[in-house]
Length: 155
Image (cartoon, rainbow, N blue to C red; front, top):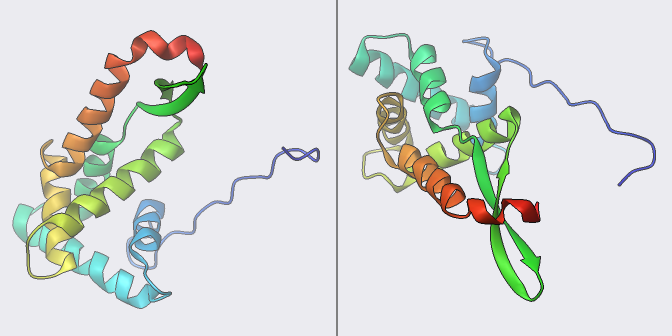
């Protein structure tokens, strides 16, 4: 650890159209090989598809999807006395949000479909309705943490 103290968290800038930090976080996770304009095109296409499919504000659907996928606890491998235990730990909201975004993108990439915008839009819609692979991943993580609650004292 640094002796100089902790650094201040950098605040993400909002995106140009929706003026939302969450959208910018998602764009930065979609980003591949520095092609940010392509990442914006994918996300804005997904937002258009969400508006067409649900007739709701796509930003509220996105927020609800991320909220439904965000985990409260996760498990961390801890080695104690030659054996490895899955120790449940509580995570803060920023880390939970990052995990949720990652899970949403992984789940949408695994979906069958035409292009990434369609896959992402339908994964976000499913997550907002509390089903889909990303929500299943969160439930699986919570189940694993609950099953290993006996090892919580190894924290």
